[in-house]
Image 1 (spheres, rainbow, N blue to C red):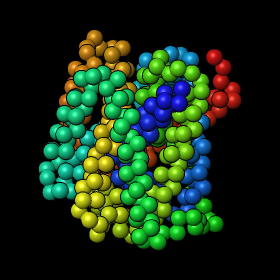
Image 2 (spheres, rainbow, N blue to C red):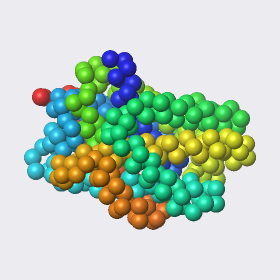
Image 3 (cartoon, rainbow, N blue to C red):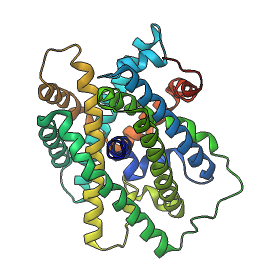
Image 4 (spheres, rainbow, N blue to C red):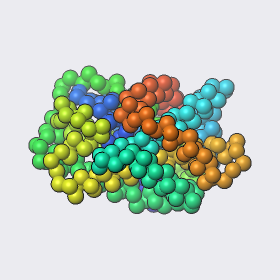
Length: 336
């Protein structure tokens, strides 16, 4: 049970910690100063939302996200949200591809190198279907979490950032709601595809609590680091590299690899949601749908990483508040 719970925890965390989150750009878009309470609220809201999605997925033994939507919103409305989530998955995968391109540009390479690397890697991992991705997650996500924490804690230690000092004014508390709602969209798609693989309700409870706690702690530490350098956050398209300004080249390279892995895991998670939904419509193999999806996504990714996050993420965070509200109340009123 614990082993299975860890698998789902890594899947959830890997879905959330993508290009926007790991780079710091998404966190800065929503949080920043006066956000301690907002991050605590996010931790609880996220854990409850994960529990609701997973318990519905488990009960329905679902293989794609349509069954989850039908239960959450019901009636004809779920068809609208079906389109809504599918477009979101495409759009955020575009952000991941653009993020991979942006990493290449850090080293004065054409963005096409990063885009090509991510595309080939996605094709490679999904030649083993979903099982290949789940197996990879067991290794990559713990390394990713520990690596990110190592960098952030090192920065906080060197810069003497007051980690526990928090302003009495918490004017940004409401940011917890759109930030949570933004991040549950891909989870509905991913967790809706593995309902038949979940073994028990205890797995659901443990993985929901663990993922919420992990993301809450990392988010709090990361936001503290960004607030400390708020005047320089926009020096790079990827704020994490601002934190690393002046650090050794080996560490810079390590973080680059770590960031790319974060992008890859989220892009792969999104692709699971896209492909499992399309397989209900198209009589094609898993890998072929991945390939056709990438043909559409890659050209759009040239719009730019920070531009996509700046406009796309806040809009979806607000639009998805309805689903968030439904997920929060489901454990208390949900039946069947």
